Every structure is written in structure tokens, then in C-alpha cells.
Image (cartoon, rainbow, N blue to C red; front, side):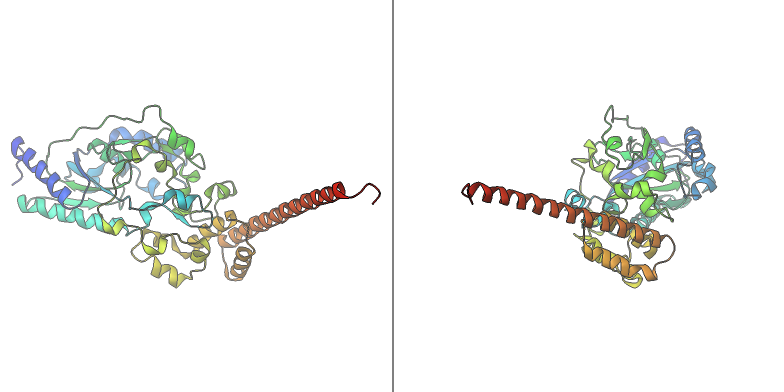
Length: 386
């Protein structure tokens, strides 16, 4: 029987839940109630402005997000958990600075976190159920209309930074979030104070100015949205700023002071997989669909499909150093391309041809200046009557 009127037993249970959660690999475990009504107005304003882009599921389930108990009737508490995912030897700077390499958001270079975290949450629930057979629960990991960031903040896991991600003084922002809805009146944790202060590093570093105000993202401008969620042509104005980012973008996290000493993940499943290590854009572009599906097995990258994969890489190849080989490969891909991929291939070819022409002209200018210099040298060395 659930000890609804015994604060001491509930406090002890909460401590054990946190201990069990840490043993299962969660970095943080916090508890909050289900009252999220204060976030309804901000959510509706974000939707009304169209900042969600093509993520129509946000519209369909907007009101449910601030009413957690509609997802599991009887829910009175949410156990919020985090799991660090920063892999060792991430090589952020090296990859971003080499335009011939593919840059992939670090959350996606290991195993898909959804199933892993959901399984751990179920194990946590079974631990609780051994103590309380009357437990009613449901785990969530980015799989339903859940306001996971406001929940995490309310449960004391951190605060929302200007880049809209949850930040923690010790863990930075390199962590996944998950929730376990329960019908136990556990004691609540305290929220952490916001500590970003006047820092605007994430805002000024965004390649596409997607952070339109503190903690508000216009997804339609965000490279993560454009490369993952957006299933259409990428607007021209964002193609050059994308650089070599073919899946997601970490720029706002890379510059965050709280991420300088963020801990590495203890989960080997989140380590950088071999197929993403120093991978050439050209190599990834040449993957056929069967290869793409095989190489992305168990990876969150698979969900975008082969068409969007080649679309993203086409843009990156258009931004790559001038190469006649790139032009050849892109032209060979054109006859079999369909839909918006055709437009992106043609754009990339045009960018490459312009870069090649510019490079040729630059070389001609150098040769011309060299020839003129040589003539002057020779003229200086000739006798006056020569």
C-alpha cells in the first residue's frame, strides 16, 4: 500500500529511488509535481509564431504537454532523469574546421538513446514496484507530448539556458532527459537558480541566428531542425551557414562556459562509432540506401532516411573545397535523383563550379604576377643597349 500519509517513509523511498537511478546509469534523478500550467502561454506563443516549422505534432498535442496526468491518469509525480552522452575524443574543433569531413551532432554518433533510457526507466520502475505493488507508472524518452525540459528544471536537474537546453553547473548540457510518471506522492525537489547571467555566447555563435530571444528557438532557422526534422528543400539562406554540418548542430553547446569541464559519458554505447570517425563527406554521399541503413542501424540518424541524408551531404559538398571530383560525383547522381534532392545537387554543383572558376582565376593571377615580376628582374639585369 502506498504510504500517502507517512512523510518519513516517502522521503526514504525518494532517496532509494535516486540511489537506484544512479546505479542504473542516470547522471541525475529529481522529482517534481505535474503542474506545468505556467508554461502553456509560452508554448502557445511559440506555436502561434510558427517557430515549430513542420513539427505539426507540436500543434496536435500542444495542450497535453502541460497536463501530464492526461497521458497517465492518476499521475501525481514525475521522476526526471538525465544521462550524460559526451563521448571521449569527440574532436569537435578538428571536424568543424575541416570542410571535407562530415560533422555530426555528438548525441547521434553512438547508439540511439531512446530505447536504452526507456529500458533503464522500466528497470527503475520495477525496483519501485517491488516496494509498492500498487505502483502505476509510464516511462517517456522523447516519445510523447511531454515538456521534458520544464519538468527537468522543476525537478531540480538544472535551468534552461539561453540556447533553450537544460544546463547544469556540473554537467553542462551534454545529457539526455527521460521521465517516469508515477502515482506516488514523493517529496519534491527544489529548482536550481538560473546562472547564465549576461553571457550570450550561445546566441552570438549560432550560424543561422536561430535563437530569437532568451531560450526561444525559431526551429525554421535551426540547423538541427533543418537537417533532421525538415523534410523539404533547405532554404537558400541557410545552405552556406550549414558548412559541413550534415546531422544536427552543436555550436551553441560548444561555446557554453558550463560545458568546458562537462563530464564524459560512462555509457560505452554513446561512444563515437567507427563509421563516424573522421569520415569524408564524399564517402558518406556515395553510400547507397542499403549501405546507409546498415551503417545507421541502432543510430538515431536512420530516422531521416536516405533522401534527407543525401540532401544534407549535397549542401556540405557544395560548401567543400573546390573539387572537380565532387562535381563529377554530383553530376552522376543527378539522373537518379528525385524530389528536392535534384535542387540540392544542382545547387552544390553550381557552388563547386564557382569555387573552381575562382580558384583557376586566382592561380592565373598568381602566374601573371609571377611572370611580370620575372620580366622586371630580367629587364633590370640586361645592358642598356640590349
